[in-house]
Image (cartoon, rainbow, N blue to C red; front, side):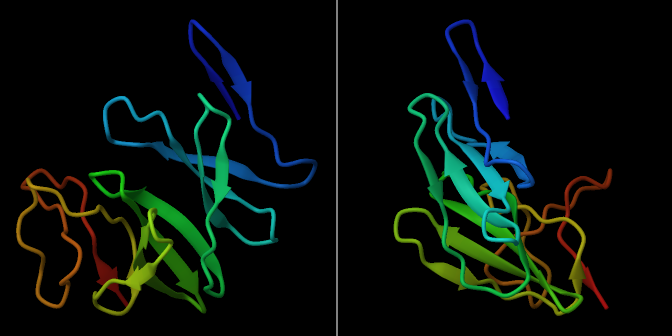
Amino acid sequence: MKQVTERFEVDLWDGEGYGLFAAGFSPVAGDGRLALLHERGGRLRPAIWDPGSGERVDLDVDLPGEVEVADWWPDAGGLLLLHTYLGRSELYRLDLATGAVERLDHPAGSIVRVAPPSATDLAPPPGCAGFASRFNRTGGRAAGGHG
C-alpha cells in the first residue's frame, strides 16, 4: 500500500503472503488516518494507520470469523464493523478511544451494505436502533438484512 503526495511517499507492507487492504480515509477534514484490513493473525481484522506519522494500530476485535471495516463513524471516533460468521452478518461499533466493541441492534440475516448514522439520515427502519440506514428515492447507500 502506498500513499504519494507532493511531499512524501509511504509504503506499508505486512510481509509475503499477508493481505493488506485500504478500507477508507477518515471523514474528518485534516485527519489523514486510513482504516485498514490486515491478515496478520490469519483472519481479516481492522487497523488504523496514519501515513503522516507512520503510526499503525492493529485493533483487537475478539470475534470469530471475518471482521471488515464497513465505514468510519462520521466523527472519526469509531468504525462501523461488519462481522461475518457461519453465514450470518452482524454490525458492531468499535470505539477508537476505548477499544470497546458494541453490537448494534438490527434484523438477523446477511447484510449487503451499511452506513453509520449522520445528521442527514432518515429514521432507521423498525428493529434497527443503534445505526441508521441511508435510503433515498434514487437507491443510494442503504443497510439491509435478509435471510
